[in-house]
Length: 334
Image: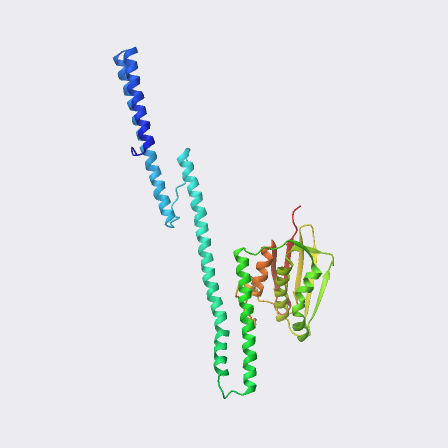
């Protein structure tokens, strides 16, 4: 405590004032008054020293507490409901501890997610890579027929395209998760948005002899990033096409109210089991009815794109009757 220069000089000042006061009392009054002033001064200095020592002990405890926090131990509770600056400091330290504990938990969750994502990515890439290695070895054989050679080359091209799409999608998802994507806020007419999203699916629709319809006010618009939102809608519509049988129907309907614009994308396909509904927007999740080529990224990306633009998406489904995606874009406050 006395190593603190401020306290040391303060005590010296108090001693000087005490001696000076005793001398003045001796000169102006008498010896008894001087002794009384001196004793009172000594008592006051002693009280100050005891109080300062107590404060040092409390600060030492807080220092030890902070040391434990720096080592990752957030279990201690130093809350103090008494009045005073130390109690206020303890309560503020406790609040910071809670915040650090929550951040530590979130970081651990993110770390677990990253580990899981890397594991899933490795698994997704391992199968096509193994297939490519096997076919590359077969292609080097001089006894391979020209027909098989062409077939293997086509399979290799398909696998490479699938891997390229997978890596591209994962990069987009990682950018959205990291918050490095800047979503533009511009008015987009919904009919234009839906038609752009349907373009890549016109051939699969024709192959499966499916039909689609768009209903709603043609003048309705949403404030969103066109390119990203088109990609989100394409992934949702692609899911509908894949899980709807031949001669099925895809319906897109949109409405608005004072709070939001809502888009309903429905199909009359196989439907989704109730126990799978809470998981369909999770990355790499594949339902029981998913095709072998399914990776489980499309709906996860659609969810990330829409929610990153302050939107909302949910799904309702009935087995053997169909599925409906409900998408809301909230209007900007003026």
